[in-house]
Length: 185
Image 1 (cartoon, rainbow, N blue to C red):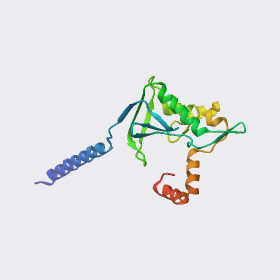
Image 2 (cartoon, helix red, strand yellow):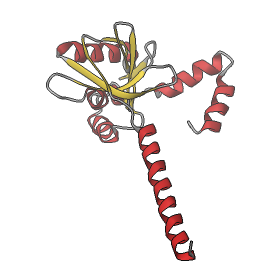
Image 3 (cartoon, rainbow, N blue to C red):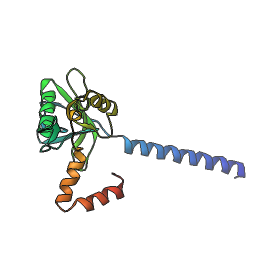
Image 4 (cartoon, helix red, strand yellow):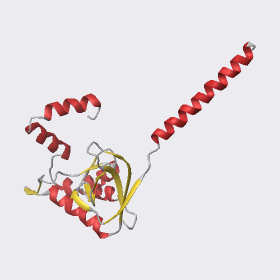
């Protein structure tokens, strides 16, 4: 076989291998979207249950259930209020939640929509009942400007409340170091 034919053969082989690798990568990244509809129950301001399945609203972080915030010099149960607001939203209309990946607690990460098509995750942030957590920055800016919900006073970010609780339990420093190592911080 001549040198020119070998070069063409090697080029075609390399191209075929690249196409095969691209197809494999596409298949690995191709996650099936899971959809659930029904009467959800709000476990807290950013978590839902339906039957035995647990869901986490993606891109938002609501106050911890037992968290208190301050408004006009008075404490208010912002964690419980956030849960109540979410519960009203998921009961007020036919709710559809969908996602394609799970968090470290095996909850399906979802974006939920009301029967009218409104993004419930965005509504929680826009109403000041949750902060942006990797998404919904525009809605958070709107809530801040309107001094809605949490933004009408002072509050600790939910993540900081969780970190403090972990630190109090003796695991905080180790978890913080681990999060930095794996790039979660």
